[in-house]
Length: 142
Length: 151
Image (cartoon, rainbow over all chains, first blue to last red; front, side, top):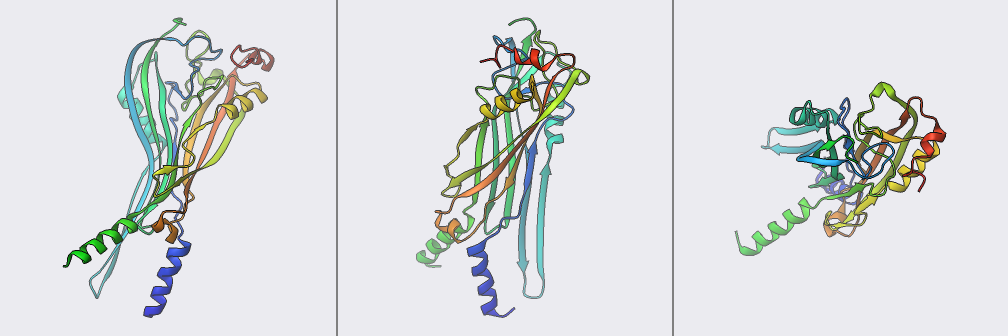
């Protein structure tokens, strides 16, 4: 590529850009512990169930790609780093931390969808962050 | 290297690292039914409703774009309350709860020259899906009498 073409391509990239699409999904598949967004803790609603214990959970699903290139004059090397954490990661994390607690629920206190491109698209990411209180509920304590 | 060169390099690194994107906090503060990101949901007495006792009566779907400006520092969308969409879609199919809620974040932004000068908003698409269910054996009419939903 001639120098002026290279400059032209760079200018085009700067103007048009183009963030590669990264997709991250948060969910808790095959998990029986309720992971509640919102104030209603059971079908039918009513006064909230009594909370008798509390712990915390935080995790995120993620899709991340970074690209870097080195050129020593004779060899050009491009390194691509990818990291992906899907819904299964969140479910497994929840299971490992709070397994076998039938009377515990998670009350989501933060659910954030985020996507970013940086450094002229050499870093692209999407993530969904989930944070919540793990609460022990007393059945019939409504 | 002269001081001016260092300053120039610092400015270049700063604008080069500038990111385009968006984020939004998703809440459902006035949802009238339980909304769960798992298959777990409790019945009126506080017992878990087994998956086998959940009848899927519809799908919840909602998406929106979350916008930010100034290298993602100024949120234009901020917090999005999806309560109205939840209440409306659940009521329309006679449901009692939403389970298996999925929240997906997908880049829609573009890193470009405007990112350097920070005035072009970036965005992220948030896609929210879930299963609208009611307990087996409960009719849509009974589900609609839920005192919370009747509000």
